[in-house]
Figure (cartoon, rainbow, N blue to C red):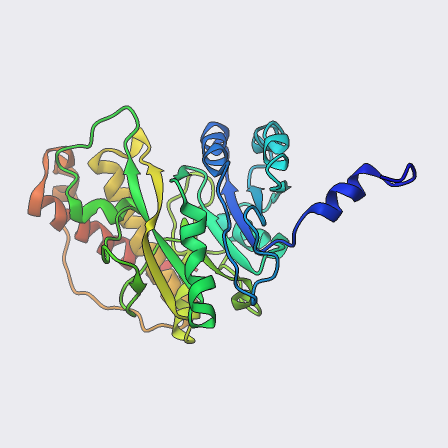
Length: 326
């Protein structure tokens, strides 16, 4: 190295072109963020397609978008930057103070250097080979693939799975889509979670994640990922890879039926606001509810069909309540 050359210049010259950007949106969960980042050590982008230049193993970056004004994620990122740099992976920290996961995801898209963007949530951990498996369809199938979705397995931490939590309720916790045991293209009616997916950045041209939907702080509004529905309606092909797996921590305070009722109420609110946002015809239901009797129900004693019926009711109540919301 020349005595006049800045060391950073020598390092940047050796860094391959970024093929993919992993984006993690985080909000006041530094310990979980640390576990998520640790699961990304050693992940490889893979590649080899001439359509995506620079796809050597490790030719990816990681962006942490911190949506907390207190910046709790900064020391978590800074304490790991050297470890990732030694593996040739840039790890960047970006503060997005506008509250809401929609703002955070949009900031991640803008900041991403890769032609491909992969989302993983801060309360998830990537399983072995996750990134390579998630990106492989882009390399193998080329332009026939626009979006790739992976699978999500629940992690109950130190707790046991409750007896009342049936398999068909797992998707209410953003887990186990279970569309197939083999990789294939998704059908129009099959959905996926934005917490484990990858897509071509160019699809976001003239698009953005809606900032009036999605989580803000501890709120339970959802559906900021409906931008993917817009892409798919416009013809974007989505490929499902069940082996591209992340584990999703089911937070202890959510492992009760009362939280699930709140979750479904706000899913109803979110769905109606989403339909309004995108100009989709809204649904109509006729039902009568005795609120006094509803309040007397001991939710925590329900299971099976009784629990499923109440879940549907809370969803409908949320959907109906959204009629008066702007």
